[in-house]
Amino acid sequence: MYLISVYFDNSATKRIQTLIDQIAMASGNHYMTEKQVPPHLTLSAIEARSAEVLIPAVKKLEGTLQQGTVQFVTVGQLLPYVLYTMPVLNPCLQELAEQVYDAVSEIPETTVSRYYRPHSWLPHVTLGKTLSREQMQLAFAVVQDKFSVFEANITELGLAKVNPHDDVLRFSLL
Image 1 (tube, rainbow, N blue to C red):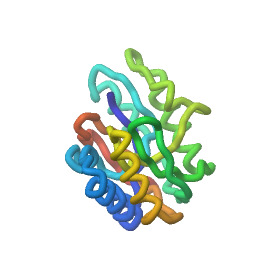
Image 2: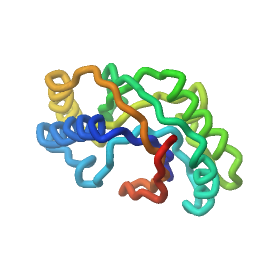
Image 3: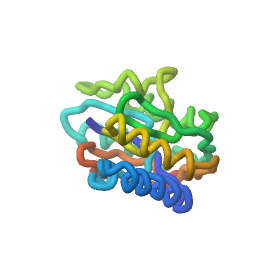
C-alpha cells in the first residue's frame, strides 16, 4: 500500500505531533511514534506492486499544485481503533484530492482505495492508531483537554510506503 499525502507548515506539524506524542504517553499506545508516522493528511491510498509504477504520475504533479490553508475544527473516531483530527473540506483540499486522483486512477495494475475516491473520502489526520477501547478513552481525554481549532498551511505533497511509513518522494507545493 502506498499513500499520497499532504504535509503542513512547521507550526501545524509541531502542534499535531504534540497531540500524537501526548496521546501515546497517556494511552500507552506508541504505534504512531514507534512507526515514526509524520503528521500528514492522505489524499489517496493505492495498492500497487511497487512505488516505481506510481512515481512518474506523482512527479508530473510537481510544479502544478498550489499550497493552501485548511482549518482543523474537530476530532473523531474511526471505530474501533483510530482517533483523528479533521479539517473543513474546503475548495483547496478538494481540488488537491481530485488532481491526485486524476493523476493516479488510470495507472495499470493499481487500485485506488474506495475510501479515497472522489465523494467517498473523509479527510483526516490520524492522531492514534490501533487503539484498544481503554486506550481510545485515554486518548480522547487528551484531545478533550488539549485540542482547539487551528489552521494549517499545506506546503508539501509526498508519496510514501506504509508499515512502516517510508517517504518515497516528497516535494514543495507552489
